[in-house]
Length: 187
Image (tube, rainbow, N blue to C red; front, side, top):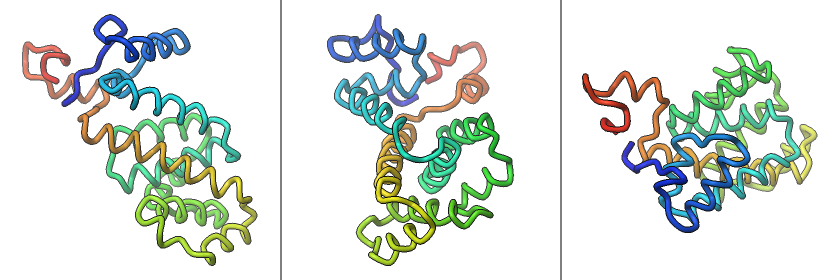
């Protein structure tokens, strides 16, 4: 990784407090969270936004497909793999996961949201009244429309951070470490 992942023992001040909170509630912290601890403000903002998006008015399987579409657009393979795995665990099939990566779905109600999410990511200023009305025609509420923006923002934050920080799955990092070096030394 390009940014050193911290631990509650190596972090200081607010970063230590935030990481301790993560470890207390989840038992561990992944490499992204530990690297975000280099900026206590970023880590706290991520944790708060992440908690808030757990209360969105979208089914979790739909939220994962939106995350897949956004992460595919950003090009974050680390995030894409994580959201694809979460979608699988929720019963989303491989064809639907693959389609979500292209902002498509056999269900037009889902596809319109995927298309909207990618539009919010690419160029939110180009979203028109007609785009919003189209979402409503497919039965999406104003709350759901707003919740997609929150989900896009969270995914843009995590995807951008992981791309810049060089976050990789531990298996990838282990396979790329030079012979005789640990993952930590290679990163």
